[in-house]
Length: 62
Image 1 (tube, one colour):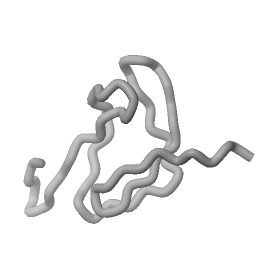
Image 2 (cartoon, rainbow, N blue to C red):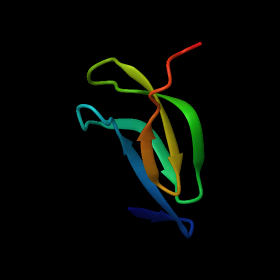
Image 3 (tube, helix red, strand yellow):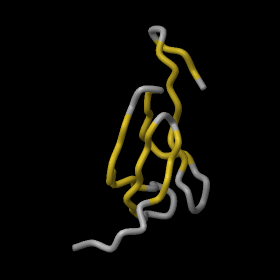
């Protein structure tokens, strides 16, 4: 974790291949159904992040 302007930041890692994405979040960031893209394997999935805890959204698209 890196501290920038008294905020802890964290790079998001793709949950399948563990490569670093181009998305950075703060400790206070909340994301619901966020489309996370992996530049390495060119895939996208919806994730949820609350208090730096990431979970993959398994709900099917409508």
